[in-house]
Image (cartoon, rainbow, N blue to C red):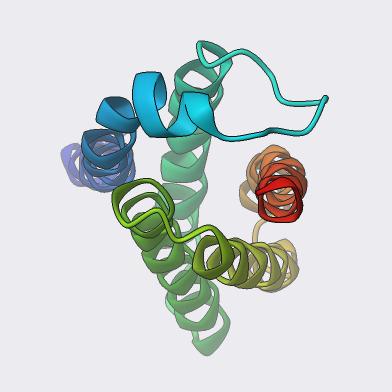
Length: 158
């Protein structure tokens, strides 16, 4: 790997993990109080699962977007895939402040469903230019779909 490639990978890791850190600023203070008091679906995992899953997914997301940026030659298809990635990442960034920070259960549901659609679109765009980058995003889509069911269950129960 070249220095340029390493720098790009580090940028992708910092951005993706940074989104996670910002989200945790809004999430962590609400876990023991507000979130614990919500009625939750029976398929809700214990709270310790979330940071493990999200950290793993943020690293995989970073590698995926790094591959698109570093390994795929410049093209309209690459710009499109990276733009879709950026859009889903922006939705990811606002979900925690809305759901946990503002207690916006319904707004959070709208955001997470839109995020799932954008992740699917990102995978669709990426698979055409880098199958591994697309494959790295599949667990993320699965987790967000699962998280969507949790969000919808919380809306229904509260």
